[in-house]
Image (cartoon, rainbow, N blue to C red; front, side):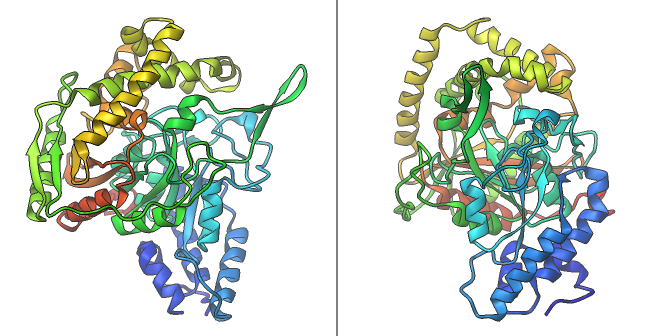
Length: 489
């Protein structure tokens, strides 16, 4: 079925459509991969979203996928569909570079669990998506791979840290991308580029990766992940549609007891009440939303009401404000031990960004928070999780902004300490959620000032289906736009 001239529009089709068409033998995986490779060749030189694209390897995998179809073998949900993997995630044979030149030489010896899950679903891995050095910025540039641009506006961030993933999706390079999130790194890039990003409940998608080792005076020692990475970081998908995000999440979900927070079984469907309730939280009193942000909330509210949801406005939700403050304590204190490594091998961008971020955190927690404050922070986190789950129950979701601002101007976090502090304050919807470990999804609801503007939906623990349904209701009622930098329109 392999064509020398595959249909040009294949790269524009959704993963769900492509998987079905490959299964029905209407198109081949080789045709799909060639179409995506052509799209990468056309757009990636401008956007610098994907790195280490190996066409021969991807086409060989696609041919194997096509032979499996011909042989009548059992096919996975993403059989033959291209997916990108982030540069901070282990993929056998590729360097887990973290955007750092000193880490770019040694290829990974195995796959992270989420990559294994994608392979087992039949996906064809096509390219590595760019990210900031050490994946600790809301921007996606580094000295190793350069600066990723937002296909809507090159002067604006594509988001971080999964900015290469979001930019490549918006440009049509692949229909699905893998990402990870400890401070908005799936949800914020998706919002900046007008695609969909879902952060699952901690433990739903395995966060396990092959052990890493560091050299010490006594020989090699295993590098253990700090508590916040174990308890707050997640792997998850970005996609151009809610349906594709749902499909990719299903593929990536699975029991894995190697992950210290991994679930022993796939969660079943939650009971549904007579009506689903959405409580709107526009802010936490620390920063004023830009007008387009409130307009996006208004648009999403109207669309959810039209779909039959009960929508109510909440004046405030103090626990989200407290969770956002805790993020700047727990995350940064865990990262403090990494600062000597960052100073040694990191680029100027990450060094300056972290310097200003620590300064912003110090205004809340002091220059050197005590061990007692750190322990009390973890204790308080547990209480907030319980309080939020009791508030949400089995029927309620929260609707929030993604950020109090539209996508930031490039390198805003390193422009001045004052501007960096403004970014941290504006990003409370992104930072509150990881501390609590709840699922959240971002979906476009408005187009303003030449940019997509998204909203965030937060659900109870393991209520991914519920927030996906709500996001689908918004997507179904929202006009679709395409970025001019990538599509030439």
